[in-house]
Image 1 (spheres, one colour):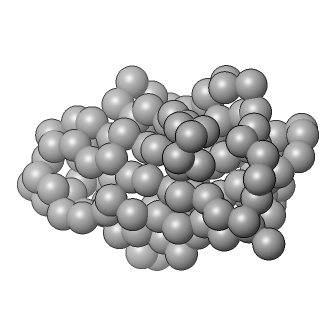
Image 2 (image 1 turned 180 degrees about the vertical axis):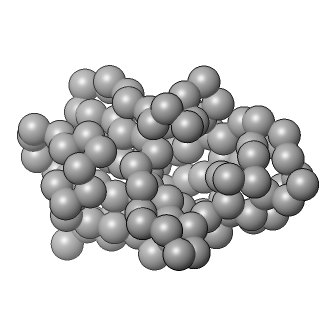
Length: 124
């Protein structure tokens, strides 16, 4: 049974940066589908970034050019580097994983495992 654990959230001022981490345990293979999602109070959960087994990345329009998803296979960790943060980026951020192809990209229902979330707050 795989487990995901996010970390790296916190409070930052507008224009600042944070790097979220999602550590995977319990699944031996390095190549897998990963996604980062976020949910703000009163809003639906939305996709932010996705990474497929071949390393291809996808970003939502709202974060494109500011956020970068990446994977360190040796550490079994996926990262979300967030630059030029805005108040609208404030949300609970979740990572999600799917361990077989095809990857679901931004389809949250395609993911089988979710982390517990890490809070990001951007203040102006």
